[in-house]
Length: 124
Image (tube, one colour):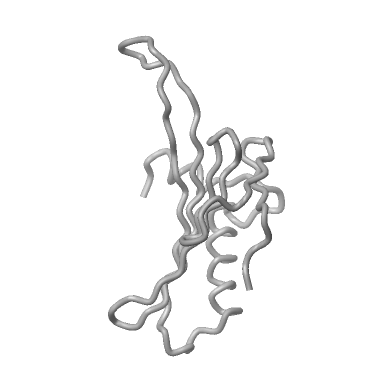
């Protein structure tokens, strides 16, 4: 089964419709090139299953030295690495993703993303 085409991602309040542009790895990109979502799955040489989701956002910025406009991008990656022998079910892997998202949000009642801000600010 494949993901729906197109995929929709919202970055900073702006929704981007991203149709599939490459079949493998599954790559979804909006028409402006601002948002790209890549979903890949592989089996490592040790038999582990790796599932990765990369969300890339690009924008045009003024270069602080030359003053000329240039493209700048940032990527957020989620990687699930589990044994290939199915000892971790789909639900258990999803629970791990959910725990990560809750931790980034500091598990608050309203979305504050305190730990996400700390990590992006350089804390470890």
